[in-house]
Length: 388
Ligand SMILES: *Cc1c(COP(=O)(O)O)cnc(C)c1O
Image 1: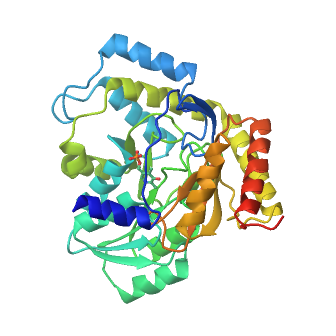
Image 2: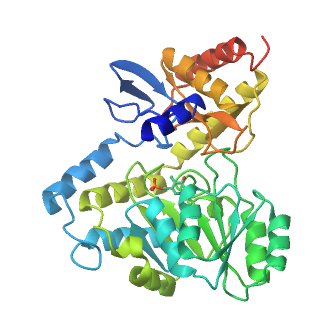
């Protein structure tokens, strides 16, 4: 039964395998004994092997040991969990914050705690799977609006009146095309129709905005976002999710979100690493600046070479290839050249929109990126994606 299912997945070029790293996840990594240029990491600021983070982890081990020993409401809350929550609240300009074990668990827990069968959730068509799962788990009526389209959203809000039992939910920075949600317009609509607005800043935290606060910071929105979700697992090079908002909301979530309540707390070691990373985000804006400069330059080079590239001011660069086969072939030819760039295929993206996704890092070396561009261009010509 499963053999047959697997065969079908392979025939459709949708089979996925894991690649095992033998080094820290820096701009270059070691895989199967080879030195590989990493163009697929979510560690945008290049902090996975940062000495300050490693030191924070070692000090936390000495002070607290390793495991947390219990769930947050029983025995797993340590002073540093509380400190990190205060720091996140200050960073996000909210009254309070709550840490979840992962961003996935934050989305699932928050949405299912807030909404029930009597609610309506308006969800962007390209929202992350964890948002979709949270919506489904809540039992609410789910109304999907066209991607980043405020007028379609408003039409759907009008067509599905829900009093105050309505939630708009969106990714801030979408991980597939690297585009940014139109937050100012979403805030307007949420206000006009008395709906809650929830933004998932997973890819944007530490990357976008003057203070690295994410897409809300990018648009310089002082308020209007009721629920801000994020993760420590991407630019912050640690693990864990969080939600920031008003104190009453956070208290309510700590008492009702099942993925918060029924899971062992993150280790103090992980928390210490997140705190150290957040400190770097606050004090080293040059990392974001370098990252975004790399991205603008790399994008323009790809466009000049003739690739179909989504144009956004973010470090996620999506090269459209259509069917899954050329995307997969492209990725494996690059790997032969020592370049790790992932093929993104269904079900992560809709059929016919497979692509090569390149994530840049602040610590990438321009010479390495130039070499990557040469190989990407050659491979694109070989596969007939661009003309020579
Ligand atoms: C990665 C991601 C998550 C999940 O975060 P984890 O901490 O990896 O579980 C949630 N939402 C979005 C938009 C993401 O990109």
